[in-house]
Length: 305
Image 1 (tube, helix red, strand yellow):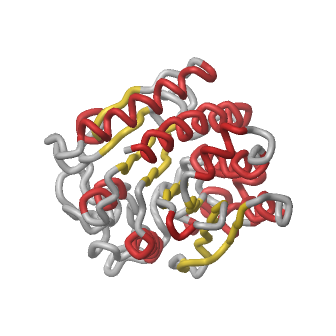
Image 2 (tube, rainbow, N blue to C red):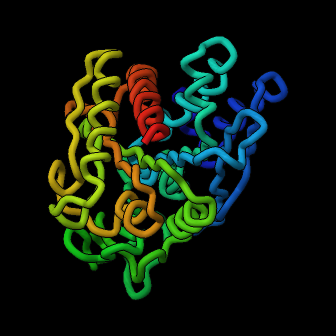
């Protein structure tokens, strides 16, 4: 899995998972590009759908690697994708879970930054776009969404790790995901990060609770309970601003507030700080296993609500 995570900016890790099951499963998969990064790397989306009435199914979007140094995020997303494919025919829980939605999966959103963490700076966070009149590179792609853009919890300093960018959606990767989500329409959305072990719902820009808080927090509760049942890993849950910090211009705020995805979440994966962003490779599969259990529980809830 570690090498698969490394390959995923150009998506061969995910492609190989999909291709190895091509023609052997009763569902359709499609691997497609929906935009390019600043340096013209492809942003690939894998769609998994089953049955003959895919147009009538709700859609669920999963993304990872929006912050490039958070390697456990794309690794976990790729692991879950592989399990969705490999377990479909032999495990009823998986087949019922996969059958409920058309799944759209982007393992690495910040592809340029992710490549940079492998070649140059392991702890690089931002994109790799150039900033006018500044020697500092990149924008925080999770402060660049066009919802309460560049308010509290974001910086206007191009040298800051939380730089919101020269304008909302200035980053092609962010705009590409947003356009796709808006075009297709989603019932569920999860943006996987690390670290802190938190399952979070909107809002991030304010500590005020959204209208759908009770429904969203119930989904978080079910996800966290299922996750803990696998390896005993304890997560906390709540709204972004109340459980971690105020952060404006985030993905979950935009998908909920602007794209009307009621069940929008941001998840901080393992751990709580012992290893931080440099999580040992032996924790990849346990992270994938427990997060997949959480995803199944959440997806079942979202489908019924």
